[in-house]
Image 1 (cartoon, one colour):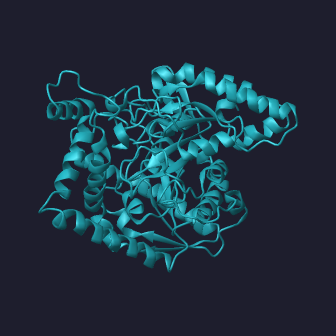
Image 2: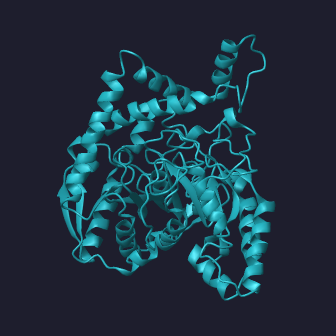
Length: 493
């Protein structure tokens, strides 16, 4: 197996035994990045010089027989909505083109303490608004399994970089499915932690009550290792929850005999692709064979989740993006004759179509006379959705559902119909509204495109999700599949 196809824990073992150096790993990854990036477009910014400097530090520690972190010297990619000191953070938007933060996000600080080698900042939908990475102001990212297909979104670049071997692991953000859906489309592992489990300090906010940072990895063990590094309380984040962080790798030692799994019938409604349904049902049979008890259950208010989300999220987006007005930082129109004209021209030119659509939706929902009818009512229904999950977790250890109702779709298929695009996240949105953790793992293929299985748990039950995911992974080979790049496209091995 080539270096760029290996996992973090495999590379860590090779570093510890001095079979390879961090510099050699970094060299191989960048060589592969340069080979495929023209076709993939995973990155907005590459940080090659910084990466080699970090690799040299790790090699000195190894030469001095110092203990190294499981992530030391392991090349990582970072979604370009996370602040990185001295490195452009654009949110894939013209509005922040050339913006260089003066500080690192909390998760970046944590990864640096673990001697991360940063490959670069990955492409995404503008300000993390989208399900296909087609809303980037720069370029669309391609799906490594078939470059005619989208990688999912909004963290499409982060998911694609791991699937294509352009990074060993990456960080994305998940507001309505933006880690799990691209993980499903690209055939990698993606985890949205419990709201408050990972600090959001330094994340350019989209919707503050929904956003959460999570990892993309090639397998479950790597996911547990990255979570060990990034989880934990942060006093600088008012939504961070002070709770001890377990060793997530310990969860991988347990089997799932006697575990009760609920299957919400609402996630198998009309619109789910038949191959996706078949793959999920086959996966559930496998979990039953491993000793789990699988039963159908119901989350009756799930049918309102999409409507609720597209009132709450645009409302918070409208509020959070109000600061981008050309006054202090970011893009500024130079032709304006007065202040109001400058505001209008700056925001009209700086934001893309989808961002403007959501700002207008949110501003309308929060406006006088409509607040109670829309935003307040959405908050009340959000509570009902949360109560559905609470009731289900009173009976079941975890819930299992599809990550996405379909596999990756072709570029341009949904761009003219925003509602169709929004429906891509119908299986993931309720989880963000409830603030619970969700894990997507590879569980099958349809016409060479990956299918994702979604495992859900009560708040702070990431260990249980990893336990179930690892049990499935040990008894399947979907996580071992890698896309192979060929002339004219990509084929699955």
